[in-house]
Image 1 (cartoon, rainbow, N blue to C red):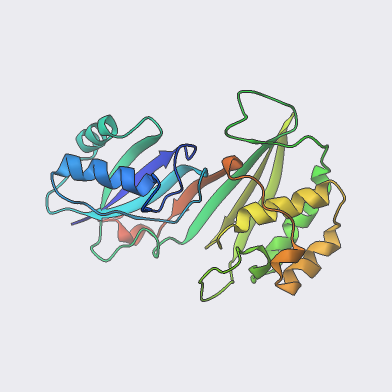
Image 2 (image 1 turned 90 degrees about the horizontal axis):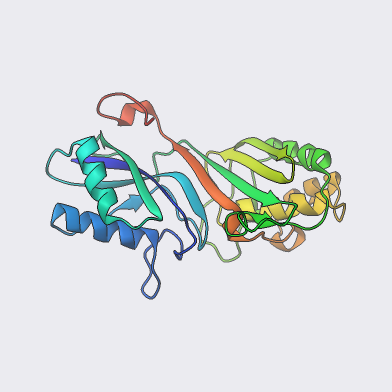
Length: 253
């Protein structure tokens, strides 16, 4: 039987999601904890590969097990094994062919930054010291919805078949001295959100202009886009799937 786990994690102590030979990852910790609880080697497949230091408010992962697992009891036991930085919220039975990565129909991210020094935000938000023109940043962000090829924001030397992504939301929200960039798409390229944020910041300080964004996208040249902002301000906030993959016909909460 195949199950989907819904979990969240603070990415600060981990070298990203994916298991690595010489560094601790979220996948490794989760697999080791599941293997202990289920008394047998258990592999998990995540919805995506977050980079070192990136957080997840919600991410899904699938694994296989021969027994029926009860939601509340299983979640309680698994959380008791996992470190404080990882929390499992639910487990749901899905159809055997369901895949946490390939069946996702949309993903959403947030990027957090603050404009006033705050010791309580230093590890989970990017401290940006200059004032930002949020209106012009939102004007530029809206343009992202008009394009699909985002090679200019992709990490170099990445092995992908297409650079096309369908962005359905891109907006900055300001709350006093804090800013949150929200973006949703069917898929994302490696480093894409951090490069987009860096480019929009450069527009926000008037180093670049709104019309420059169009030229950057059309160029398909990463060197023409803005810098990649630090990982610790980035959060994967949700991953959505068609309801048909769930055995009970319901989407995750």
